[in-house]
Image (cartoon, rainbow, N blue to C red; front, side, top):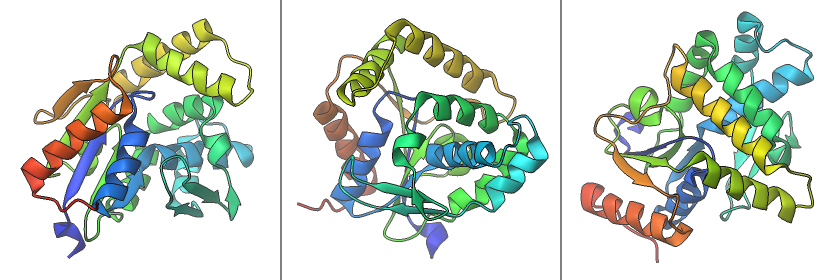
Length: 231
């Protein structure tokens, strides 16, 4: 049954490497992937495209309920997200959409609208759930809970490097400020604030490479859940 499928919940703020880790784990284990942050970004983007104020909780929640979204799995960095049939991956990863997502994620009606939708991603053989409240609210009984963190400065540097490599303009000091503001908003919202679950395994990725983070998580998955790893 779907509610018996194992779950690995991976939480933490933006820029700590959750997305890369979760895609890698899903590929190594052959499990399904939930990018919950994308659902909030999609809700914010769809609301903005319809000209709705992001503080209009009732109408934004209605958008969340009716989202026409499809996740197309692929290799790390090659997955696609379709909104109303159109690929929107690059737009979703933008700082403006991330900030807007943080605003709508603070709305209780939006979180309620997306809660069951997120839980529906749980099905055999297992689910890797990427978000900010996966281990505390969405899947509190997850067999393995991970919480990644890193300094705001390091996360801003990583984002700055990504933007420059894409030929986009970026301001490092501005990114640091935006990240700090988003962290504060996520940590102090009234519903499902960003915080590690009491039984989460914690890792600061500030000084770590991608391979180190992935191997740490895989070792815990093997130890705790006796998972089968795809060669």
